[in-house]
Image (cartoon, rainbow over all chains, first blue to last red; front, side, top):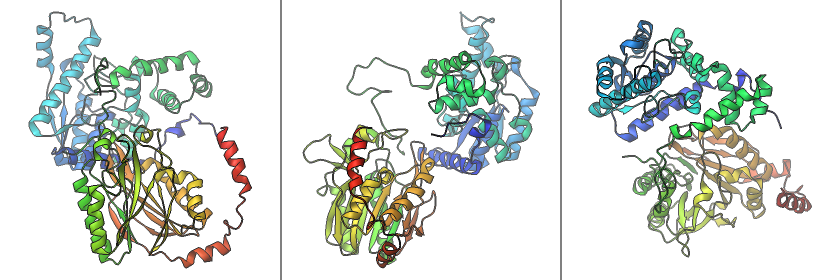
Length: 283
Length: 272
């Protein structure tokens, strides 16, 4: 049996095919849902820029509404400029909603609010963005298009019911490094495609710093896990301590609760989320 | 013959029936004697729990009756996939291919190999078929297989040994598997010196994108007709049974079969 080699080649894609399949997926889902397009948060990072760009290529820029949702604590001039650049290049409208006043209201209204708890505060930001996006989607008969990638989804590096909450997530089956490949392929400016990823939940928040691993390494570990490789084999091939790979695997398994509908006690004949197995059907 | 590569509306038999009828009429206008639709074309592939309400007995079900009328009226043979319910046990469902002729129902084939891995969950819903019939018709001796069956050389071999000249594989194959099917359809044609016709779905169901690419493979492995990738299509192709004899002489795989190996094969397969 030929052994799976964990080199960067393993993550290479047939980008033309991936592009057309993602575009077909978006067009098909939007059409079947009866919506008139998609709304999506555009931070100026690689995932949201690529998703917005490919949605515009699939549906036409007129059917895509990008929303920049900055807030004062993490405001970045470069990110806002990047979001505008992508909107201009791919021909979709970009609206800006400053969520700072909404956040301030939350902080004043929540008796348990603690300014020192930056994780809870960061998650509140992501969920506030989600609330705004769904408001737009409802008002304008559009779908919320998410931009989560496979690396972050697998290790649970996202806010539950926040940035991952969406009607469709067209690039969720692509690892971060693959999203970067796709970005370059469809013409997202290189400066955006290669810039360091940030969830922007607090000032100076960089994904690779917080995770303690480069996406190039993380993606290959996850690719190995996806293909049922043992952590020993992955560690050996990548010249990493096995404990390190074990930690990534644990993180992947421990965050399954973030990727599923809420778990319930099985009581009935057929139960939502387990054995109530229905297809997506058109309206 | 016509390869009718459809995109189906999941769970909407009325919509799919009407699309099939339209394609039958168009195929007839193009002088086809046979029109082939994909696997589970009547309901779409990813019906999940809806299978229990969508399945019908064969041939007594209302959908077959309606397609029979069209086949009679258009004087044409029709092959299509549908969910079958056993007459004896309500939960015994099959993934079935149906053959209709100008005089009505001719026969059926129940899928033998049910994929239950990756995104496929057929064993959860379907009972396996146990028969591999070959149908003697006015347009030749026809054997039917369904999708994942093409991964197993045994079933097409049995059909060929029973005299099939035209083996038809109806399919619902998502894009990630295209290379497998393009290889295997050619392999099954060559190793059996038989016409292998492949008709696949198109469209997107539950994130699965069916790639189309329906084709007629001649006994010598040449692609005689090929439908578009990823789009609905109706392709007309011609079958020349004289090609079987020409190829059989040049590639005499049936003459060179070694039946004694089959015992060994069985023994090994039972002890995997």
